[in-house]
Image 1 (tube, rainbow, N blue to C red):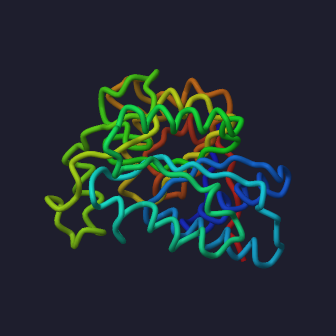
Image 2 (tube, rainbow, N blue to C red):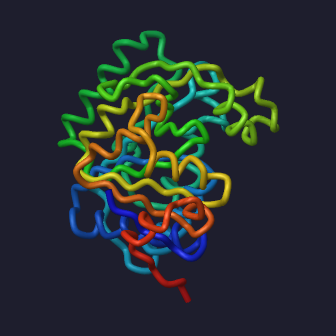
Length: 257
């Protein structure tokens, strides 16, 4: 695992955007694993500006998102499909048929999840997987007790996760769907490169736990210690609880001007 510590949130997000841009620029057929969340909005904003300033042909690019809510919400403005369309896809020349999210409104969950795994393999696997981290230490929607061998499946969302995601639902956790489809921990571990982004003091405790604590299914992000090419990109607030020994091993990047 590699640690990169930025002085502030914007620098951290811009650094991750640069990684995504470079992946696409170097590989016209890049397969990206994408994530959602407030922090990712900054990443995608920086990425869109990079693409506009120095265009890259994305006709051969394919994307797979980590997760989607189950039920009718998957067809509404609160869905992750709508989020991705608003913050990224509509700003780029990527083909709509090559942007994929788990079909949360499916009637046959088992078959839909199997097809999603098959589609990832058929695309050649994910070259760069972008990850956030939840307060329970989850990546994707892999809540506590998720097997490190898990695959795309339907999961029940923890109360802490629903509270964390309530902003898109009028700040009412009860309105957040109870279930979602998520790629599994095992699926994430098979990506060629993984980049986890965390910013803000609210992520400091879980980052320290994942980075320096026990590797356990109770904290699915801890499985990233088994990933052969994983980078944590943090701002100083998210890195504030790391030990001196851990910080000594990190790469520190300067602020952007």
